[in-house]
Amino acid sequence: MTASLDVVETTVTARRPLDVAMSLRPLQRGKGDPCHRRTADGAIWRTSVQKSGPVTYRLTQIDRHSVRCQAWGAGAHELAAGLGRLVGEHDECADFAPDHPILVEAHRRFPHLRLGRTDRVLEALVPAILEQRVHGIAAFASWRRLVWKFGAPAPGPAPDGMRLPPTADVWRRVPSWEFHRANVDPARSRTIVRCAQVADRLEKIVDLPREEANRRLMSIPGVGIWTAAEVSQRALGDPDALSVGDYHLAAMVGWSLLGKPLDDAGMVEYLAPLQPHRQRAVRLLEVSGQAVKPKFGPRTALVDHSWH
Image 1 (cartoon, rainbow, N blue to C red):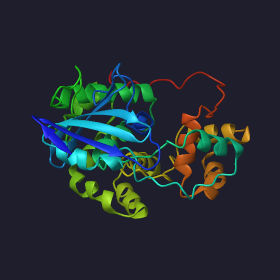
Image 2: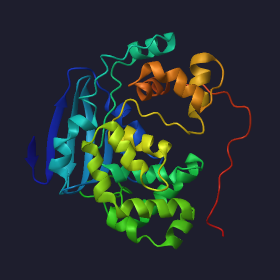
Image 3: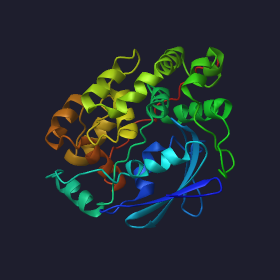
């Protein structure tokens, strides 16, 4: 790790191939995410608030095994120290042995799929709450509006329009009418505030076993199995965190692997032999282009809560 002026630079070289864009793709909350940007040169820019303070960081792929990070802000050294975890350097899949031909082939074609972890719980939790029970397009719009209004400017030479994700202290103080204007209904806004009030306790789950971490997440009213899984995938890098309750996932898994839809119970039963790598199997379907779900009707209607 080297520091030059206000930039902290570090490089991670992994034993197995990695793909930083692929690993970080689940962190982006739609097009125009103020906390995530991919520029024309292929670099990925992100913002975060670490324990030590705010950070803007730029990731570039050097070769199949190496990633370079440039970071600015009070949290730069902390971010750089966790770079290996972020890009999935420690993600192990030696015991992942699918027998379905589609998964076998996807695993062969994408050995560089690595499941990273941010170690930042609230930064994964708030967007997941916004995505509860609404269309993703609407949730992403709510996220953009709230971050643009309440997120602080990103430190360093961040691309125009990038902001820091709001801190727990800020989320606790967002007025109810601002959530309303962002098209967030009272149930979700109350859950966000409730989580922000116990954020210090929630951030500690990164050091806990997976089952205990999920139990603590789901002890918060308004945080169920789907939301906990979405957080575990991103903040904890959990390769088994299956988003049970997702509007599309069970049917997608069924159509992709069996040629017919499944419900949640059927998906859980079918994927059970792949534990502890069920989320890895889902990601392989996605990145390989093998995720299939026929369209039988109109897209789910967007719900606008801001008019009343």
